[in-house]
Structure formats: C-alpha cells, structure tokens
Image 1 (tube, rainbow, N blue to C red):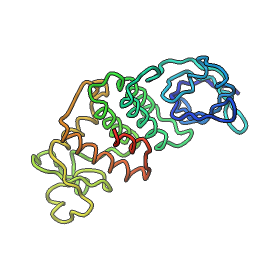
Image 2: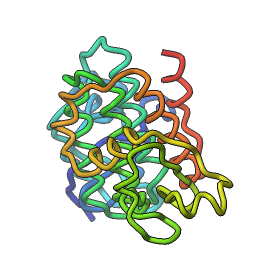
Image 3: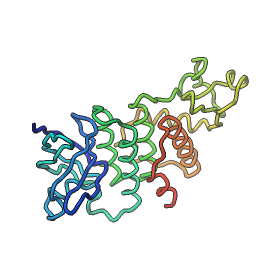
Amino acid sequence: MLYKTEGIVLKSMEYEEADKIVTIFTKDYGKITAIGKGVRKTKSKFGSSLEILTHSIFLIYKGRNIDIVSQTEILESFFSTSKEVIKFAFAANCVEIVNKLTEDGEINIGLFNLLKEVLHYLRESNDPKLLNLSFKWQAMSILGYRPSLNLCCRCNKSVEDQKEMHFFNTREGGLVCNNCITKDKEECIEVSFYFAKLVRKILITPLSTISNATIPGKKMKELEKITDLYIAYHSEKSFKTDRFLKTL
C-alpha cells in the first residue's frame, strides 16, 4: 500500500552501504520511521530530501517490517546551504524536542505546523534563542502542559495583580500566589514579574512576530533556566542538542 503525506525529517542515519533510515514527523500520520533505499549512491534530490530539517511531500510504501520511501518532493530545505552553525543548532534542538516528546503514529497537526513555522523563521530571526525557547513553551502547551500563569496552580486565585516577585512550581505547573507560598515554598522557584508577563505573551503570540523580537540578556537567562527545568520535569528526557547549545 502506498500513502502520501507532508513531513519534516527529524532524524537521519546511514544504514548499510547505500541506505538511510529516517524519522519523519508527518502531518497526516504522526511520527514514522522509514528507509530510503540506495539514496547514498547518488546526489539526487531524493537523497537530499532525507536530510534532517527537510520539509517534503513523501510517497511511502507500507512495508512489512519498515516503511519504504518511494518518492519525494522537497518543499523547503531548512539550512541546507546555511553556514550559520548557531541557528542550525537551535533548529536541530527543535526537531529533537519533537522527536523525543511524541509517540510513533500520534497525529498532532498543531505541533506539526508549529515546527514548520519555527524552522522557517529561525533562518531570519533577530534572536534565535528567544524563538527556540518560545517554541518550547508553545510545544509544551500543545502537548498538554500549558502552565498556569494567570491563576495560582494551587488555589486557582488570580496572580495577575502581583507586581513584584512570583513563585513558579514546575511539578504543579505554574505560578503560586503569595497566600499559598507562605504555607509551602517547597519545589518553588522565585521568578520575576517580567518572566511571568513574558511567558504569558509567548503563549499567545505567533512565532512570526517573536522572530523579530529581542529581550535583555539577564531576562533571557531566567527564561532559559525555567524553560529547561519545566521541560526536563514534564518530559523526563535529556536532550543532546541542549548540551551543545550551552557550549556556544
């Protein structure tokens, strides 16, 4: 059986003498694994369509043990000719996040469109780190881990009128109000009013708009720290590209 779908290559590895095994996040079938036979023998578009970060239309044959890529049409090859190592690293981090936080065959059109957007806008972004971190918050929201930033995650009372420091709890998934924090500060991290306001904004702002924005370095460090803690807790995963990004 043949099936056709739009997809983005999350992972690509060489197999035997001339083949490639790829992990593709598809619009219609979720995450799949497939093999491209003989693609390393030639420098055709077929081979390049199976490189990481490539967005293509795939015609795939349903195999007994593994699906087989039959034909491809490249729609957008992100960073194929780019020398910008930092932006490439942020893009690779985005696809690793999607790869590790999704199950095979789990369809998520919202996440697919978000990944497509972030890869597109990363190339021209004023601040690729901000765009990458924004993608992570929006991706976690789509996957069911949207943090509570307007209401206390314990008592459900509004925290929007708190203009000084806030407390964020990664396990409980959001901000804790002043009243609740006096009873129990365990596992709570002190965060600035700016952080709370920023993440609220990130969750409702298109990545196309965020790609033109910048924030001060000190604020970026706070955002990065809480983002990493939040994803690490809720995903129970570690990301190779995160370690590389910290060396840049």
